[in-house]
Length: 618
Image (cartoon, rainbow, N blue to C red; front, side, top):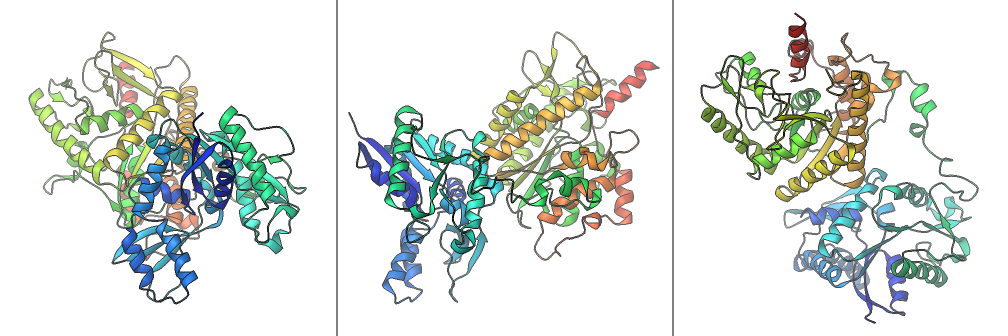
């Protein structure tokens, strides 16, 4: 029987287990040591582990250290962050049957940016205090990013689709005096990691619990019996898919530990009464913690339902590098420009309400999908069916529509290829499609343009699984053309104007928004480069008692948008701006800006449904 090849990604914990497996019928084929998971994911996108081995060695030698052990240690750490080491690891994964992974370095080790020959490199486990070295310490990996283990899993499967993946959560000690050992942060974060296990797509060993006497002289290491026991578990998981029954003790995230539960030391923000019920509603804080930074240089693009228009305007006003790949011509009046879709989003695609619309827009922009369908409005002029309300007075021929459409799609392609952050507001689940071509539209054919024919057009209410699959498709395709792209998801709090389902519109609204919120949560947990901003949650939650809605209970007051965005700007501070403290005063507009916003209501295709209802009643 051929030997089972094992590759290690992690700390000495995985290394010691692999060593014991090698004493059985396993072969140790390689390792990437002491690298944080988020750094490896960044490396897969070309943003980290990019330093060359020769340059790294020259860099260490240039520091002038005389302690040979110190030089050896520094070189070893930095060489784990090189192109050559990453290539070696990828080759090891190709040749292995199993990858062992632990998360010690995710729990407490910082990453940093170092500058070598004028180039910035994101490196793991290499924080250096030296007068000639620019080394910016970036901190430990936040709990909010534990969902990226699914990204790591996908990355490894792309290299070797047949490999088995075994994740070992770093052990905790029972009965230790945390104030003495100094491991309180690691223990707490180890327990929190366990709560994410239900969303992971791979085999995971729950927290291993050992008595203090099983710790070695160095609190970061354990006695041989601990590694022996864990090797037994890993061996059983690999060969049978089940953990052995015996003296091996495990903890789930909700079992008692040292007389306490994971709820014992939770901060106030995780309990309803102190976090929600007791504070004045507008004084509620800590609703959003960013997953990644957005710098003043990052190109930010917006897309989605009409609520995304509010986000884009405030990002632009705040000084972010807001992308506009189809800027308004200088000689075009403001009202005319808006009617043609200028300045609404980062490109003139109008409202993109659904996941299917988003995928279709991307595929059309890159030539993977095309339609020659053209609609006519009520005056007989030709319009673009994919943005029927942004064609002004229309065109004199179908050819003109298709020509303008191609120019627009070229700009959209450029936007996707160059953006750094893509903000997408998920709007609704209901949509209309062409039965023959599969084309999807922002509004039902016949409402403002085109002619409705039930034999041609079909109503579809997208379900959770479909939307999740379509959003995963979009994320994958965006990464293919723009590996550095990060995505910020929101869900629009604006209710449906009307529903094509045979039920009350309030029920359809709640169903639609709940599904979209669930999809956004899953994507946030799965991907390190996907963040979620809770605009929907803030507007719709009980403590705010619908205070942000206008009298129609659908449109959002400008003050409500300002309050929502205050939570965003409190986390995303551009360099040089003051740190925000008072959320009730954050992000407020000047009087002129507020008046402009009031006069400049967000453009919404759905509003035409209400207009059609009134017309039919007359």
